[in-house]
Structure formats: C-alpha cells, structure tokens
Length: 125
Image 1 (cartoon, rainbow, N blue to C red):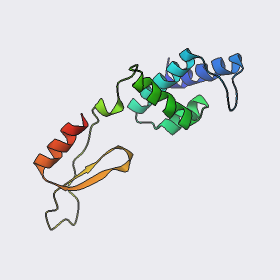
Image 2 (image 1 turned 45 degrees about the vertical axis):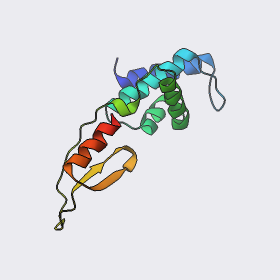
Image 3 (image 1 turned 90 degrees about the vertical axis):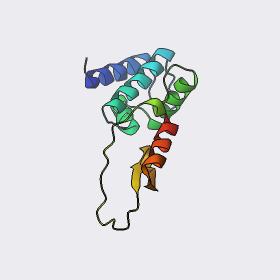
C-alpha cells in the first residue's frame, strides 16, 4: 500500500469512528499509526506539516504524539538518524572562514575547522 492509500485509509477510519474536528479522540492504535506515517513521510523528505495535511490532522498534534512516543521508548530519537549532507564551498569566501554546517530546523554553524566539525557531528549522535 502506498503512502497516499495509507493516508486515505487512516482518514476513513477516523471518520467512521466519529472523531472529526477539535477535541476528537483517537485510539492508541490510530495515534501509533499516525506517528509511524509521519516518520515514513519524513524519511521520504516530507515535513510534519505535509504529512499532517495528508492525514487531515494538526501538525501540532502529530508533533506532540511523536514526542510522547519517543519519550515512551516506542520510537528512536530523530537525532540518532543519519542524514545525508552535501559539503559545498561557498562563493566569495576569500578569507578562509572554515566549514559551514547546516543542521535541521535552519541551524547554521560557520567557521569550523575539520576537527571541530567532527566533534560537533559526533556530539549529535
């Protein structure tokens, strides 16, 4: 079953149960299914907001559920996942400013030497 079909099946199950709108109550299985769907979509490069729209839910709710699942030990923390990165030389950098590391959520660290970059990346694992 592809992701589109899975999202449609989830929406139908929620509608059949009568949980529509704010304050809708979801079963534990529905919560787990939604969190797993978001994780799978994130692996494909989608954001939580995109996955939430596909499921017909609030991204805030899905983020909360994902955090709760990680705290409960049901999911591995996202920071342990390795993410492919591309190292590029910046144009116009004549003063040898070092490496620039772009992290999730828009974090940018500039002016690192190779050893500092290695220490930073190891600290994230």
